[in-house]
Length: 210
Image 1 (cartoon, rainbow, N blue to C red):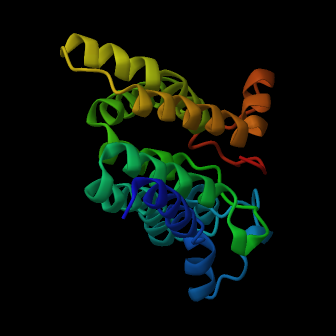
Image 2 (cartoon, helix red, strand yellow; image 1 turned 45 degrees about the vertical axis):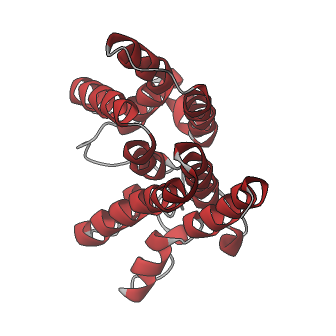
C-alpha cells in the first residue's frame, strides 16, 4: 500500500485506539458510576484514584500508556518509526479529545509516556529521569510532567549528540509538538503552579481540578 495512504490510516486507527476511555469504562464496570462526576471530572488515572480503587487507577494508567505505544509499535513495524510516531501522536490526541465523549478526555501524560519507548529510547530515558527527579524534589506530579515535557525534545537531542547518534528531526519535531500539546492540556495546572496552589502528592486533601 502506498505510503500516502498508510500514513492517514495510521492516524485514524491511532486516534480511535487512543480515544478508548479506559478510566470511564473500568470504573463503570466496577459499579462506581461516572468518573466524570467526581474530583476533576477527568477520565485519567489520577481521578480514578480518587475513587479509592488503587487497582483501577493502576489499570487505567497502564492501559492509557500502552494504547499509544501499541499503535506506534504496530505501524512502526509497517512503515518505520516515523509512521509509528504519527499513529502514537494520533492516539495521544484521541485520548485528550475522544469522539465517544464529546471530545472531552484526559490530559495525556500517561499516553505520552507510553509512546516514548516505542519511538525513541533516549527520549524515554530523558523524560523518565526528569520526571522522577522533579517529583522527588517537589512532590508535585504536574510540575514533574510539565518539566519532563518541556525538556524531552532538547534532552533527546543532547543525549543523541553525546552518543554520536544521527538525529531524526521528524521524531524530534513530533516530540516538541506533543510537549506543546501537554502544556495546553495542563493549562489549568500551570495556572495553579504559577499561583502556588497546585497540590502536592500526599497532601491531606486534593483540590478539585488537579
